Image 1 (cartoon, each protein chain N blue to C red):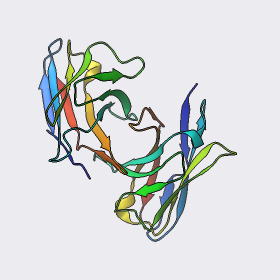
Image 2 (cartoon, each protein chain N blue to C red):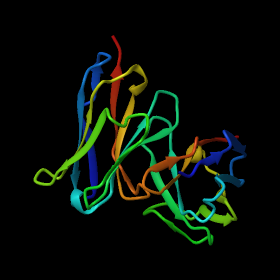
Image 3 (cartoon, each protein chain N blue to C red):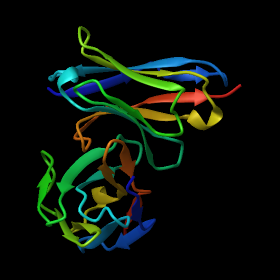
Length: 114
Length: 110
């Protein structure tokens, strides 16, 4: 079964760092476009970042320079390293496969608050 | 970078039809989009990919009640025979190097 399972969310203070994981099953992460999309409480979907199968990466202006997308082929897992976190980064973070996003994970909540 | 415009809300009676619109910004009218459904408290779900020609490909398990069409820069999602479980937020998505989502349309079933 094709599945994405996110983990790593939690409560973090402003300025802190957090790494999200997205474990994939049923397919190979490195062979697909893989994205992170977030949703602030009560708000719409916001695209965050993508990593192409060839390794190219792109970021939303709101996170560029603070977030890093990567993957571990041996673990078939996608990551999002989030540094210098701000209150406005509070959201449920989803990983997704393909463009458009054909497969979605269930999401992991990140709360940035003191 | 394309921009996607959606109306904030739509409503229709149980068993009737509703047509949602997603409009591509100037210069991007040929872009392919996708429609996603997000039911309350759940993750988004892919519904279909929709081309400027009006051709669309639905995801696995998406009911026949969901269909897509296009006209110029407008991309449409039509839900026929509206059911209570169709009450949800609907988002359109497109991309070039980066991804873009519309602001979403909340569908209420009366």
